[in-house]
Amino acid sequence: MTSDEALGLFRGTGALLEGHFILRSGLHSRQFFQCALALQQMPIVERFGAALADKLRGLGAATVISPAMGGLVIGQEVARQLGLRFIFVEKEAGRLVLRRGFQIAPGEKLLVIEDVVTKGGRVQETMDIVRAHQGTVAGVAMVVDRSGGGVSLGVPTFSLIKLDVETFPADKLPPDLAATPATKPGSK
Image (cartoon, rainbow, N blue to C red; front, top):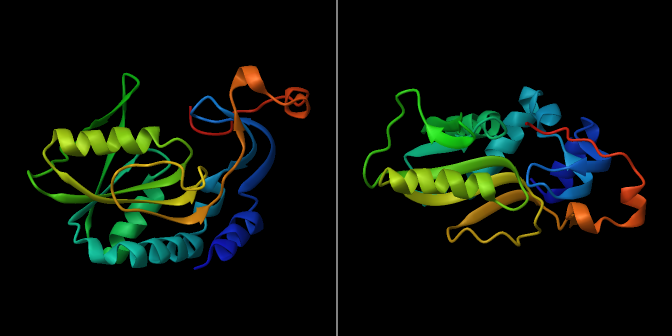
């Protein structure tokens, strides 16, 4: 799957939004990838999952782990496509934690799968959890890399869409963006 094909699926499902958005990172942007709108269509989930699985197949992982909520659907599909176990981390008291009896064996190789990455904070937090449980991060993959490849995670990293989407701190908005009411459509 090419980046243009993946972008076409986002546009076709109305999942690529235009306007003034506040991202989870606190940055502001003119574009927002509402992955949930694209990932509600199982044929699209299968196509994205297959494309990511093809990129990850050679990494020798045993398990896929994703941060909830955004990474759950695509993480589970990548795991299914690769025939691997799937687990997730979720928020508790404002931080991601491994719960629900999920275990990571010492030395176990995991893939971290996320829907959209801007600064990589939730991916890094997930990687830290894997390492705290003595697991190894074999690689990271996402549907959308909004950093244009600017996020360095120190492991093999893959995406279907790599865009350098303009983002702005709240105190440095361009006039046109400052004049447009902001929305925060992502998970809170």
